[in-house]
Image (cartoon, rainbow, N blue to C red; front, side):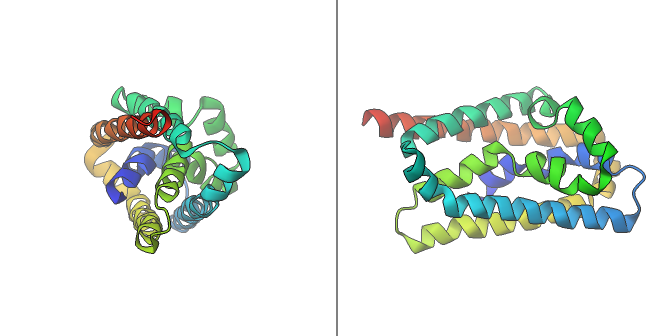
Length: 201
């Protein structure tokens, strides 16, 4: 669960955008951006993990249907990651231009949402919580995974400038593509689970 969620959040793939969007920032400004971004990440994922069960009930869709939709979404994101086109699925040109113009807000949008806490990550925590049943250990595992991934994202972005200088853009993209392979497999597995639940096969 931790590895899967880390691959979906993909703080490594977020590094090029973080470095570009904080170009010219002081070290203190970058630290503020990183802290706020990971707080947004942890807060959003925790909120949807808690509210996921209520959303299923409120909108009347089944877990199987959500697993199929979430799996397709994850596969599309993974496909773009494998093709090196993270910008198309994670950050539009308009979003980037707007973020640069409003530097005080980039920690929330677009770094916190949707670069880190994107729809794929939100769908994943909702699915995991939806399948947890009443087992407190399984329920708790989702929140532990969120905490660990949030911490990992903080460490990755905190040392983002150094990491980016060391491995370069090519290295970051290579790592993101490896994560994309894992994410594609998770997406397919979610679809299989969903089909099994919907058609009782």
